[in-house]
Length: 370
Ligand code: ADP
Ligand code: MN
Ligand code: MN
Ligand code: MN
Image 1 (cartoon, rainbow, N blue to C red):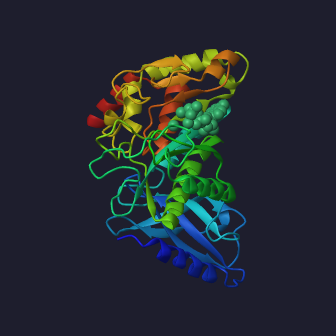
Image 2: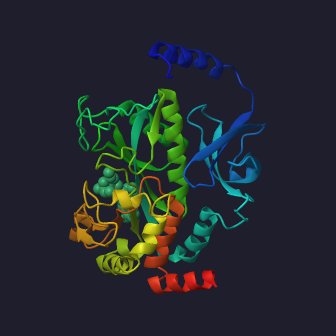
Image 3: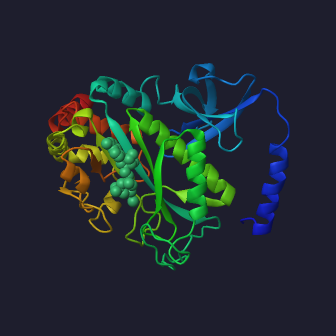
C-alpha cells in the first residue's frame, strides 16, 4: 500500500526537523556498491569523525551479499551527498572478496586494467540512461494493468497530457550537479512516464563510476516521490517501447581534424565482433536485448550489425554533425538500460583500440573449455 499524499507530505515536513538538528564535525558517509548480479545497488551509512579530504581517507568496510555472506567494500570514488548535504559523502565502492569475486576480478577492476592500457588514446565516453517510472501498488504510470497505454507520450515533449514525472527528472538533475556527478543533460522520452539523462563526457573509468552514482541518486530521489524507476529494457512486455543506454565514444585521434577515418575504422572493427558485444550489453547475457533490438522503435536488429550517418535504427550511428565536421565521436546504440557500463566500455575499447577479434574470442572459449 502506498501512503496517501497528505501522509507523504507530513513525513517530509517531520524529516526536515531532524535534518536541521545541529551536528558537530561528524560526517555521514554512505557506501554504495553494485550487487553480485551487477544490476542492483546496495548502500549503508556510517559516521566518520573527520571530513574525508579524498578517497584515501575513507576506510574499507564490509557489506552483506544476497546470500548473507560478508563482502569487502573498497572505496573508489567520492561524491558529495545531495540528500543530507555537506560535509556528508556518497562513496562508490568496488565489492571484493565476495564468494565468486576474488580481488581484482570484479568487472570494474578488469575495466580499470584495460583503461590503463589505452590511456594514450584519451578515450572519452558519454552514456544516455533511459528509465520508466512506476507507481507502488504495481501501477505503471500512464498505463492500465493490461499493458494498454493510457496516455500518449512523445520524445522531448512538453505538456501534462504527454508526460509525467518532470519533478523527478529535475530533482535528479540538480542532485547530480550537487553531488559532482557529470550529468550532461536530460529529456522526456517516447512513453508517458519514460525519461532519459546523459552522463559525460568522462575519460576512462570515470564513465562507469559516474553512471552508477547517477543511478543510485535516481533511485534515492524516486524514494522521496514514492515511485520506482525501472531500468528494465522492456518492463512493459506488451509494448514495442524499450529503454536503452546508448554509449558515445571517441579518442583523441577521432576528435582531431580528419578524425572521421578513425571513427570509420573503429566501426569496421565493431561490425566484425557484434555477438561478443551483445553478450555484455545487457544484464542477462543478451537475453534482454534480444527482445529490445527488434528493428522497431528506433532500434536495430539484434542479429545483424548496421551503421549509418544520422540514423536511429542502426547499431552504430555517426551523428550528422560529426560527419559534416569530419571528426568527433560515434554512438553505439546497442547497450540496454540495465547494462553494467564497465564491461560495455571494456568491450568497446578492446575491439576498437586493442584489435581484439571474433577469432580471439573463439580461441579464448576453447582455452576455457579445455
Ligand atoms: P542523442 O542525440 O543520441 O540523443 P544525447 O544528446 O542524448 O545524444 O547524448 C550525447 C552524449 O554524447 C552525452 O552523453 C555526451 O557526454 C556524449 N558526447 C559528446 N561528445 C562526445 C565525445 N567527443 N566523445 C564521447 N562522448 C561524447
Ligand atoms: Mn539521447
Ligand atoms: Mn533516448
Ligand atoms: Mn542516443
